[in-house]
Length: 343
Ligand SMILES: [Ca+2]
Image (tube, rainbow, N blue to C red; front, side):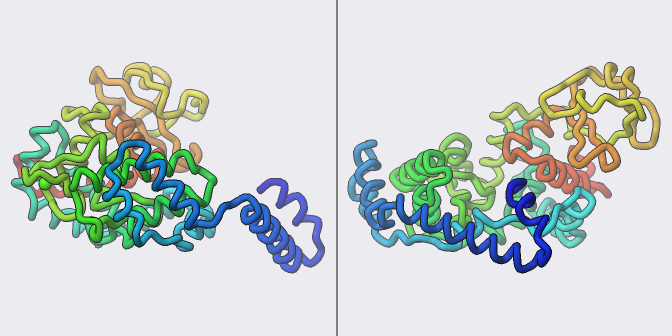
C-alpha cells in the first residue's frame, strides 16, 4: 500500500493515475494468478483425493464435493478493503445500535431459564452469551448463505492462505462425517464461519456442544446447542464467572503507552500507582485481579482496563473493536436490570 501511495501522489491528474495504476496492478495480478493455477475442478479432485487419504469416508467426500462451486463472492469479500477508517466512536454505534440492545434484552428475557442453566453449568454470565450471539449473527438472523464446502474450497483455491483453509475444509468434512448437520443445511459465511455463533470448522470441533442431547451439535438450529457451544468456548479459554470484562478508565498525562496491550497485565494496585483512574476520576477498586490497559484507537479515544474475560473475547476474535462491542452490549443487556437474580 505504501509503495502504491508513493507512486500515485506525484501524479498531476490524481484520479486518472489511480484508475490507471489500479487497472495495471489488477491485470498483472490476475495474469500472474491464472498462470500459476490449476483449473478449479482439478483442484476439487485434488482435495477429494487428499480428504480420502486423510481417512474421511469416501461416500461423504464424494457427496460433499458433488455440487461444490467456485464462489466469486468469497474472493471479492476477502479482498475488499474498508471504505474509510473506523474509530471506536464510529464503530460502536454501528455494531451495537439501540435496536440491537432492545433485541438483546428481549432475547435475554425470552431464553432466560435456558441461559441461566447453561451459564451456571459452564460458569459464564448469560449476558455475555447473548451479547456474542447478537454481535456475531444478530441473534441467529444473519448466519450466512453459502455452502460451507464451496466457501472453504474457494478460499483454499484462491491461495493466499491455502494451508489455513485446507485445514478448515477437512475439519468441515469431519463435521459432515459425524452427521451433525445435513449437507443441504451446511451453510455459513463467505469465509466458512458457521451457524448462530459463526464457528470456523476447527473451532466447531473443539468447542461445539450437543446440549439438548439429540446426538447432534447443532449450532444452526438448536438454541441449547448454540448457547452451550458459546459458553463452552469461553469456559475452555479461561472465562471467570466472578469477574466482568473490565471498565473504561482515564490515563494520566504521563502514561507510558508501551505499557498498553492485552498481553501485558498488572494488578489494579499497580495501575493505580501508575495513575490510572476510573472514568469518573476516582480510585480503582481494591480487588486482587490483574488487568491490561487497552487503547483501541489512541489515548485521545476510549481507554479500557481489560480483565481476563476481555482477553478471552479476543481469543474468539482478535480485535479490540469486537471485544469492546461484545462487552458494551453485555453491559446494556442487564442495565436497567431485567432480573434481580442474574449477574
Ligand atoms: Ca443437539
